[in-house]
Image 1 (cartoon, rainbow, N blue to C red):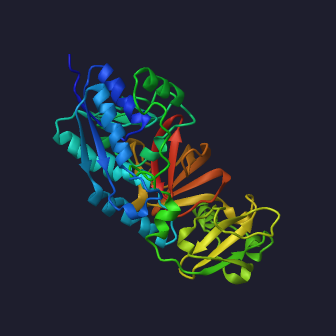
Image 2: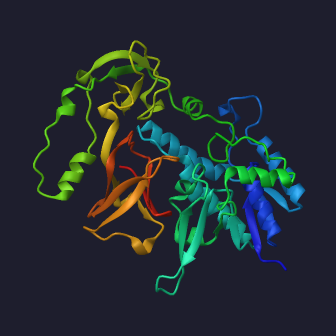
Image 3: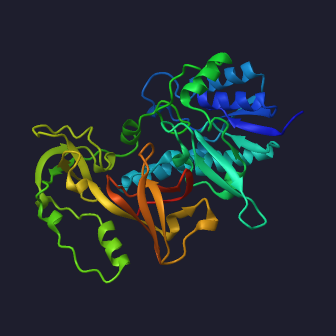
Length: 398
């Protein structure tokens, strides 16, 4: 008996291949769709075509599983919604996460609409995460996004911007499995992707490394690298007496404002917009006991500020801010009202261990106050907050 129609986003990797295999085994009508998101071969780093190998592998998996397969070209939408946004963010000295945007704007929006138009009941992907639904007293079920069982591969963070509607139509068949278990299933099912390495490129583009990608689209411009010592005067700023918790949070969320007089020029670079806070590689400055890390970029003046060692004071902050426009709740029923707070665990990047934090809702946004200072908090990144194993919401760091 057919349990329903499911469109699987076949990427040509082992995870989505096993997702399709498991769903077919469960009795669903499965259709494989490969998303072609990029045409510009000028930004690849090798002579082979970045997406063709993946497309062929996806097609071979579909043949092996005896399921229909087709390719959908979403390159126009991808350029408009992901690539142009990404370049603009880097140009303005911010650090975007294209994978999170790809899930929100492409996979679970445009791709989802295509799937529904083909009569699908659900869209399935190879993400290591889980979902369930609960009743909260309203007429409609509430869907929960849960961490994957494999702590090393949990990818719930990449889905932190999904809505209740998007989550209601999503399936994550491998969320209860570990990566070794997924590879074992693929091997036993004789899938060509069983031993294939995980993609390190941008979401559904292929073999594209970010630095090369940026350098081919953003103009290079020589500037100075300024090393700021831990003893710099701006790190000795006096802590005022605060009249409210909001004043205190605002003080600690405000990043340091650097100028060249805070340190010494130690090298040159080819564009501050190529670098991001916390970056070590690419500075090409020697002569220090510990490596230099980017502690701030000034894209307007084209200056990179660097500090010696991964424990440099300029890398750390304990509070960040998310504006109302960028605040997002998967669990809309738990959204905070003004002056409310919530104990959570949070992360600002993929694979970062969850850290204890408190959300503080204020009139113009939400403060995230971490128990321990966080390294390299960067505007444009996404902060995601959890309780237990459930991802409740997220926001773009201001």
